[in-house]
Each structure stands twice: as structure tokens, then as C-alpha cells.
Image (cartoon, rainbow, N blue to C red; front, side, top):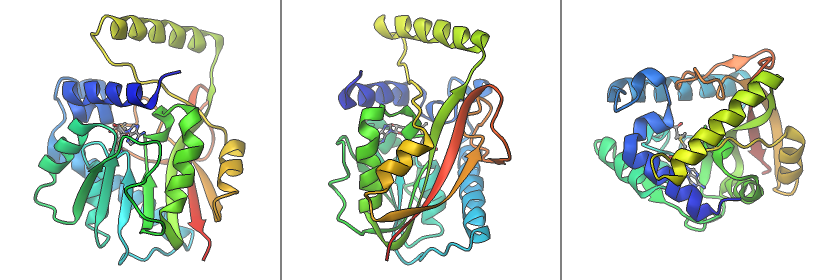
Length: 260
Ligand SMILES: C[S@@+](CC[C@H](N)C(=O)[O-])C[C@H]1O[C@@H](n2cnc3c(N)ncnc32)[C@H](O)[C@@H]1O
């Protein structure tokens, strides 16, 4: 199982290669094909979708408190959150992602960025944030680190604060699909060994384990929704689903409120 250092190195390779494509991997946008404006518009849309969902749930967020975007990449979502909160901190494991985020958001003083290569969030005190968001991140982190990060995301949340995160739950795969995935992983593994490509794996954590982890965090899961985030055609365009896809990864978005 890769260490956190190896995971960080893979993201660093991807960030140096083509940061925006590593974040939203639309095949048509490979080789620096993302238009920066479209990239940030996709972030705006995603945050608007999530905030509208929270309004429907009657969940209120105090926007006078800072927000946190865990696994911020180039700041696609940090920027959209900073426009709506007092400020937003984007945290990422990759120095190049952080440098890219700072450069692309230099005109946004409410965007703050922090590199974090730890298994925790020691740079932030308890109860710092009113809203914590994480999308397309935890599904790429080895399961052994997940309970630690989830606990930390809850720790830095203020009482009454809201945590929304997305995670792959399981994979609905036909025999053919499993075979294809095996071949693809083997090919990427070879490319990685020859130093030609970094391989980012998908990891799943089922809802029951997530519930068990958060049970000790003085926080309550108030809603869980299926999303299209693990759909290969996701491309930064978040939708809520009524049922699981019949094949492929099933993505869930959790809404958690820290006890007051
Ligand atoms: C697919 S990108 C998503 C970026 C951003 N959330 C978005 O949707 O625009 C995943 C990001 O998570 C970061 N990441 C992966 N593991 C991390 C960790 N353990 N701590 C912080 N960031 C991490 C990667 O460097 C990468 O920038």
C-alpha cells in the first residue's frame, strides 16, 4: 500500500504534467486543453449546486466564518467558496497544485492556500471553520488514512458548522468491467514504473464505515446523497442521482453537522 509520501509524489507529477486535467479529466481537455475561465465556472456551478442542496435541507451556514476546501487542487472550488464566505482556505498535498492555485487566484484576496503533507490538519486549530467541503479527493486517498482525515475535517469544524464531502462508496461492476479495470490498472502501473505516468487509484469506503468513523466525532450525518462525481464524464458538473449507476463507481455526498 502506498505511503502518503508516494501519494503526494503522484499528485505532484500529475500537477506538473497538466494540473487542470488531473483535476477534471475530460479526455477532450487533455494536454492543457482546459480554458481557465470554463474551469472556474465549473467550480462556481458545483458550489452553487451544493449550497442550493443545503438550502433545500434547511441547513444554515454562517458565512462570517472561514470555509475550508480540502484537496483544493488549483483552487477551482476555493475561489467559488471565497466569493461566498469571509475567506476560504484551500489545502493540498502537492506544492505545484498550491503554486498553481495561488497564481490563478492572485486576484482573490479571500482565497488562502496551505500545503499540507501530513496525515492530519495540524496547521489549523480546533473549531476554525464554519463550512468544510471536499470533492474528488477522499476517493483517491488510501483507506488507511481516511478515518484520520475525516476525524480532522470534523475537528476543525465549529460547533454548528457544516461538513460536506464526497466519497466513492463501492463499485458496481460486471465481469467485463472488472476485467477492463484490471487491464487498465496494469497498463498504468507499467507506465508508472517506467516513469512515464503517475497512477491515481480509486478507493471506496462504504457508508457504514464512514458512519462508524464519524460516530466518534461529536458530529451528526444529516443527509447522504448519490452523486455523479465518479462518472467518467463528470467533468466538474455535479448532479444528484435518484439511483445508483448499474456499472462503475457509486459516489455519495455526506452532509454532516457538528454538534453545538
Ligand atoms: C481530483 S483533484 C480535485 C481538486 C478539487 N477538489 C476540485 O474538485 O477542483 C484531487 C486533489 O486532491 C489533492 N490531494 C490528494 N490527496 C491529498 C491529501 N492527502 N491531502 C491534501 N490534498 C490531497 C491532490 O493533490 C489534488 O489536487
